[in-house]
Length: 400
Image 1: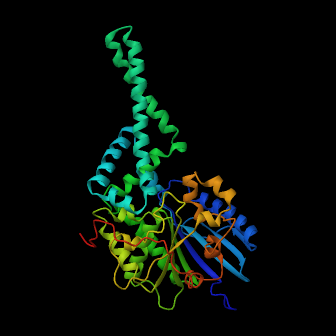
Image 2: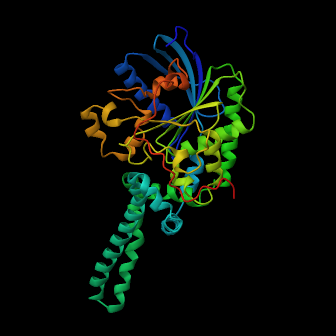
């Protein structure tokens, strides 16, 4: 590192995935995990109350790598849209199941996604399978009850069906353990318009774009956009709009994009994802931004080490981004920690935002609160040798 730190003040915009939880949970996660990483890595980091901001956030004061850095972190909230899309009854959810399965199978997207990584496809099939299991259990109980009622009167056997809605409602109330309804709503939301963004999401993304543009006019040294899970493909389109609109000043802060645990192919492989594919192609060739994509094969919910531009079949000849690297959970987590987390799939999907007890060159808190820009931190980092770049999507058009 040079004697003069490149970053003293940073703005961080965090774009969550399809997640209904309130944004304060991200603050508490950052507070807890940054403290743990500071102890392991030997630096100081403090989470402070946010100054007046348009959206929810917090401030970070850190002493890392011999420099003092101030970062203002802001969550770009769309959890209200997520909650609205999840406000479905049991019957509507099963209708979603049929429609979503038909879309992914009928378009051929499901089979092409399986050629990349089976983990996220299994995660996508899980809610379908488990919701059908729930329905089967409900009808089996109804059948058994009907047999007993038939001993009293043959027509009474039909009364067994009355337990079906109660059993399905019982399963739905336990979804905090099973995540079947949650995941079904997630995949249905992406598939609803065959890969195009719903109007309410487009409107919110325009607000996010304007807010990031305003930050680029400020006196910070870096504006860092972090997109996690589904938030990664939102980040791609937001930054593409920002650059197309000429809203990145030539002599302003460094503009950086960190995508974590991305599931871009789940959307870009759908037939009407023209906007996302065009944005992927556009952003991948721009010099106004540095884009680093971090995934890990241990994360079964992400398309690990799949270059989202290349696998979508839209890589231009002058492609520069993203730099695809691995968080390598089996190396950056101790054997004991890995055993504790290995089968906690949803927790592992958030590990990118957490502490590593055997940290490598990826450290979320050095990236968001350290003295180097994203470009400087990963300047000499080669891409992962095991990355997947083969074009796999059936749909590659950039316009309707």
